[in-house]
Image 1 (cartoon, rainbow, N blue to C red):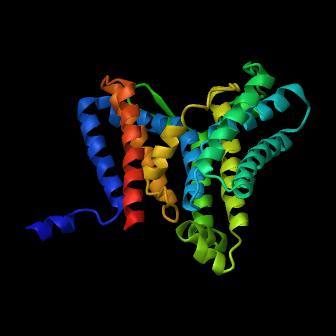
Image 2 (cartoon, rainbow, N blue to C red):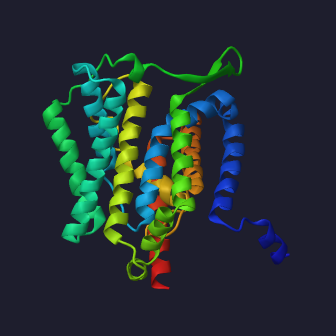
Amino acid sequence: MRNAVSRMLPRSSTGYLVLVILIMAAYFGVQAPEFLTIGNFVDLIEGDSVTAILAIGLFVVLVVGGIDISFAATASVAQYVAAYCATRSQIPWPLIILINLLTGTVLGCINAWLIDRLRATSIIITISTMSLYFSLLMYFSGGKYIYGLPAWLSDAVVLLEFAGQGDSTVRITLPVLVMLSVAALTAFIMNRTALGRQVFAVGGNPEAAKRAGINLTVIQVFAYGYLGLLAGLAGLVQANRVGEAVPNAMVGGELFVLAAAVLGGASLMGGRGSVGGVMLGILLLAMLRNGLNLIGISPYFFQILLGVVILTSAAMSGLKSRR
């Protein structure tokens, strides 16, 4: 009997995530019938598209064996720079997008350079740069919002539109496409290229990777720079969704992004994880937050669950390291 039950259970963390998602969908569907509507699901996915882009970038850093807490501040700086250029200059929009992505990449590479040169723990360095980047942004911007963004940045791009439940209309917009494209690109890099295999190797055993001829500094710069690049892109997507640039809009969600990455299988010790797992982690947490909101549970309870997820992941990583 025990063997039969064990055969029915999932054999991987991804399988368990899928099982939990299905159970959660059934429960919230009974408690709040509107939870299982196609309109609610699309809104849920689009609402967390920015979070998903950031979590995918953070996943690469976690795989290499580091951690970055400054990605939200990086996204805010890159977004504000792009919005300022778009409203205060005649720079063409392709160049503004390039400036945005370069800003995020440079800030991410600065994190990697500081970690490498100072030989300090990545979380200490990135907490410091988070405070530095965000404080500089608030100092020079005065905390002012930027309204009146040009149409290419603020107008919603509807990719697919169809009738939903009742008289509602369901729209799938550009942020969903950007999120899926980032997920596909990152999965290709990490699973199908030598660069991705080197990232996993460095995170799994830095000393062995160094003896194999892998340049640890270059791989680390790639990981943090790639997160910075995606942070800049996430800032653009956020500006497109809300139609304005808000200096502090993206700061404060770091715990959600980290929880989604580790829940999806990215180890805090490095060397393990998958983009698919991260996407499932995002979906699970987004469904949980949405479902709790629909049935009237305090949002602070969701924050408690995020803390439990990260604490549990840290404990499990520590136990595996000791073994």
